[in-house]
Image (cartoon, rainbow over the protein chains, first blue to last red):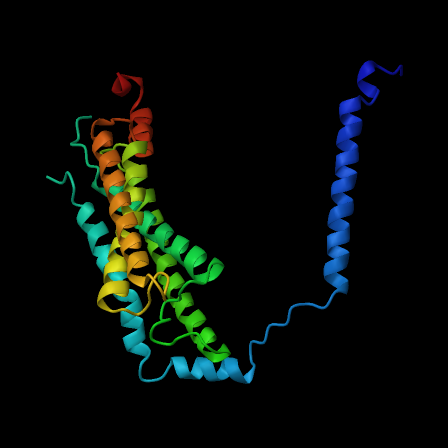
Length: 88
Length: 175
C-alpha cells in the first residue's frame, strides 16, 4: 500500500511526541523520587493522638458540638425560609 | 401549562449550597492554608501538638456539617430541577449561591466571632478590624446575591422537569 501524506509525521506530531516523552519522563522521575525518599510519617495511634481523642469526648463534648453547629442551624433556618418564596 | 411560578425551591437549594461552599472556603483557606484560626482556637489555643490536634478534630466536625449542608443543597437542587413550576434561572441560582456564602460569613461571624468568641478571623493585633471586615464581606455578598435574585425574577427558562413533561405530552402541548 502506497504511503500518503497523512502517514508522514508532521512537525506538529513530532513536537507532540516529544512533549509526551518529556511529560512521561517527569512523571517517572517524580514517582521514583516518591518511592525512594523517606516518606511522611503519620501516626494514627500515637500516645498524643489517643490522648486527644479521649479528651475530645469528655464532659465538654456536647458544649463544643453545640458551639460549632449553632451558626449552621441558624443558616439552615434561613435557607428553609427562602423555600417559601412565591408560595401561594 | 399555567402553573404559578415558584422560585423558592431553587433559591433554598442555591442558598444551602452557598452556605456549604462558604464553609468549605473558610475551612480550607483560613483554617488550613493560612492557619489564621481554627474552630475552637480561642477555647483551646493551638500552642502544642495536642492542642493543635484537638483543634484539627473540631475543624473536622465543622467540615462534616458543612458537607451535610452541601449535600442537602444538592438534594434540593435535584428536586427543584424536576418540578415544572420552578423556573431554571441562572441569575436566581448564582444570586442564591452568593447569598448563601454571604449568610455564612455574616451569621458565622456574628455568632462565633462576636457572641460566642470561640475564634477570631485573625487573632492578635487588629482582631476586631479583621472580624468586622469578615462581617462586611458577608453583607456585601448578601447585597450582590439579593440584587442578582431580583434581576432573575422575570426569568422564565423552564426547568428540566417542565421540558420533559411537555415533551412527553406530545407536540400539541408544546404549542
